[in-house]
Picture 1: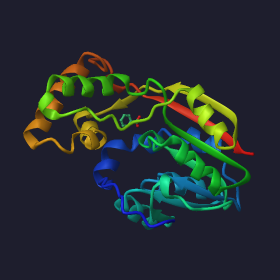
Picture 2: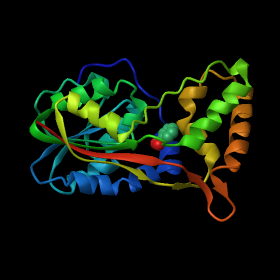
Picture 3: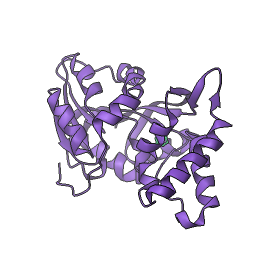
Length: 252
Ligand code: BEZ
C-alpha cells in the first residue's frame, strides 16, 4: 500500500453497536465470492474484519484495507492482515485471486479510479465481487437531508458524498477498466434500523461536520421529522430504503 494521509475516523464501538447489520446482511455477498482454500483475497473497506474472518473460514488468506485506523486495529485484533488505506491508493499488481468489497464503494466518487486499481490488483481471470448502494439507494434519507439544507441556507451547500450508480452506468465503468460482467443486479433491501438518530450520527457525519452543535441538533430534528412521514411506520418502526448493487465481474 502507498502511504496515505487520509484516514476516516469511525468509532468501531459505536459503529458495531448500531450497524452490525452491515456485515450481517452481507453474507449473500460472501456466498457469491465463494472463497476457496489457498486463494488470496483483498477485502477493500474491510471495516472491523468481520467478513474477512468469515472468508478465512474457507482456508483463503485475506488482506484487508480500510481508511479507518481504528477499524484496522479491530481487524488486526481478529487476526486479519490489514492496512490503513483507500481504494484510490491501492498499488498491488496481479496479486489477488479475488477482490471483495461490501458497503464501501458508494463513498468513492472516482468510480473509474477505484475500479482501475481493483483491476490492477487482480490476477488475469480474477474476480471482483462487490455490493454497495445502487441507483435510488437511500432516496428518502438523502432527500430529507437535502431538504433541510435547502431550508437552512446558513448550513451552506449540501455536498452529497455518495455515488449510487445504475446497472448500466456501473457496467460501463467495469467494462472500460477491462472487466467482463458476469452478474449485476440492483436488489431492493429495506433494512430495519432501531435508532435513526444513531444512523444519522454515523452516516451523515461527513455532510454535517462543519455545522455547530446547535445547527446539528436542528438538522437532526428536522430530518427525523421528514423521515417520520416516509420511512417510519408504527408497525415496522424505521426502515432504511436501501437498494444494493451486487456485482460479479472477471478481469479479462
Ligand atoms: C448505505 O450504506 O447505503 C448508505 C450509507 C450512507 C448514506 C446513505 C446510504
